[in-house]
Image (tube, rainbow, N blue to C red; front, top):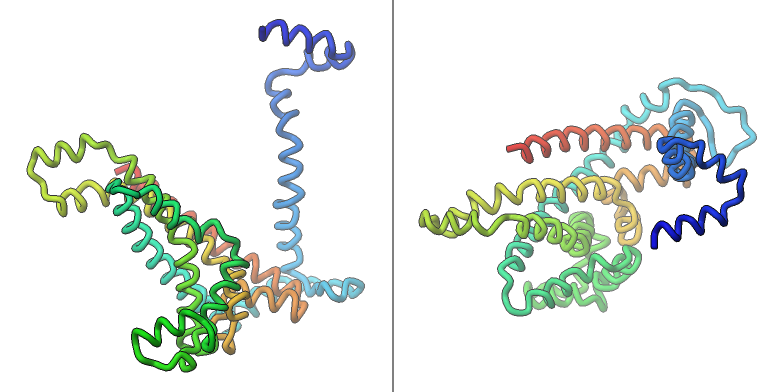
Length: 315
């Protein structure tokens, strides 16, 4: 059947084209198929990156395209590294990354460990837990903004019922102390299922005979957890931390929808600062330099983390 199909295709192929195809090697044919993808990748990813690197050394402003572009050297980078507002935004970003990863990892691994017990109805609860991850960030942001409303929001009434504080006194999005935690709660609620899935894959990959051997040796459940479950699931946990760390370092949509960086600059993460410099102050060259610094920081930290992950996997 396959030979007959190939013969039919060969007969339908024009003779000049057939001769050209016959003369192409396997390697050349492979390059012929992947070249459109490579060109698309260059156009979408590589070219904008090099263009941003070029702009980072200039005084270019997107709202003044006809002005003469001057080469400033490393002046933009020096201003960024000496700007206290930039360092404050980086500290705010680090605060979000640390707490969201910590909460998502602890809750996600706990949920994965419970679901791995395969209790009755575990498939239903797994699907229910995954619902927040399936929603759009815009939907989640607006949904939680409504929940956080002090007058009609359900969140304020629940806290009031538990603590006795009047609902109107619970200003989650406008309080300097509570606003950062309001975003951490939303991001944890939305992306903990993602961490749970990766951890669940790690737990399901542990062979059953290891636990059977541990039971023969009369190891307790607690001992099995610390000596078998956690060490063998650790690479998957670290992988989840890597993915969520990169995404949370770039956090923008949730902060922009909930607080917009406020109150004041309490929740102004690095991506919000970048957006304001690029599209409100129109300092395109300056913001390009800031974007390159963020890219180098994320790439460098991720590279170090991946090396540590490989060492854990080799143990």
